Amino acid sequence: MASDRGPAAGDATLRRRIEPWEFEAFFDPRELRKEACLLYEIRWGSNHGIWRHSSKNTTKHVEHNFIEKFTSERHFRPSVSCSITWFLSWSPCWKCSQAIGEFLDQHPRVTLVIHVARLFQHMDPQNRRGLRDLFTRGVAVQIMGAAEYDYCWRNFVNYPPGKEAHWPRYPPLWMKLYALELHCINLSLPPCLKISRRRQNQLTLFRLEVQNCHYRMIPPHILFATGLIQLPVTWR
Image 1 (cartoon, rainbow, N blue to C red):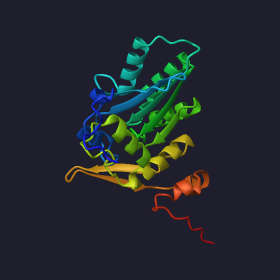
Image 2 (image 1 turned 180 degrees about the horizontal axis):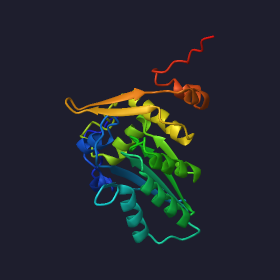
Image 3 (image 1 turned 45 degrees about the horizontal axis):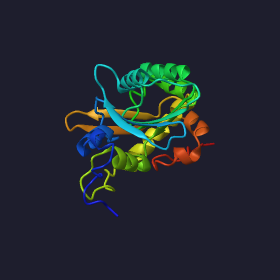
Image 4 (image 1 turned 90 degrees about the horizontal axis):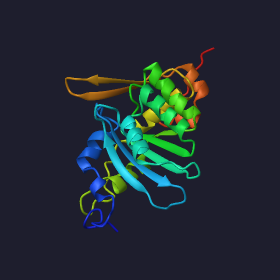
């Protein structure tokens, strides 16, 4: 049953929630907003409690801000495990990927799962290599889908009364396009997703340029999930 009062007044995360307009502005996969936002939750050992908070870019990227804040405020015990989940409006750049890897090397009992709304400058070879390095280290990097948007809305957003299930219904096509490109990155394939911007009407244009290597390497159900790709035809 939907709440008539929004998040409960006794909710410990209430003062750390972002506003609905902020969530829509930062996490819309169709928008190429320059700033980044990070929503995160932390679980310690067998403790069932979850610490949730948010962060935005300052003079440093949100990933660096999180790592500096986390390591300065927490005293790690080697015997205690820690599970961290990030919801990022942009995927990490190569420098942030490097910092994340160093952080995980220093704290082997920490596990990290990253959900991203968009891929940051995904044509850049260094950014692609940085994401592959995270995959190699065992970091799960995934594109946000409907379930993640719904989860973030309920747990990180100060949604209006009675609107706990009314997260923005973004078209799933954009999520599928980014997921397809993330597979290309993971498999060391060339980019297949091209993104451009028409400044006169502020439209973001997505275009697929699929090569034979994409057809050979990417699982068919992922390749064809967009509905924009058909099997290549071979003429004899």
